[in-house]
View 1: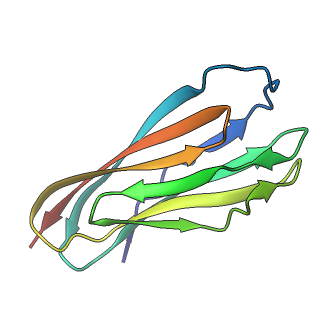
View 2 (view 1 turned 90 degrees about the horizontal axis):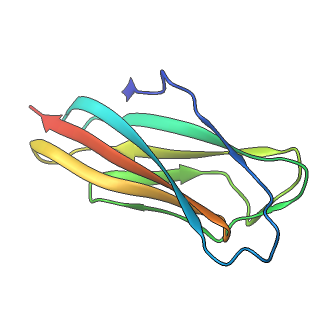
Length: 119
């Protein structure tokens, strides 16, 4: 099993005043590289609440070759962290893309995912 967790990204979430009218998106990307069909590669990030509890609206992944891994609760207590990750398991050859989205009501983290299935 191939692990692609060489880089470590901590998503530190700010606690924004409830009067915020527009949600902002923060974009990242993760490339799993070349992975043999039927094998898996993983990448994980830590989500950390700062001074206040952090309400998590949703965590979703899209793309047929990608699967979500997370241990995040609906509300992350202040000063705590949880893991959010994606697993790439190609079933066909070629470049495949997806997205992992962490929606925190006031801001949204969008991680563009890519990987290539090979024989």
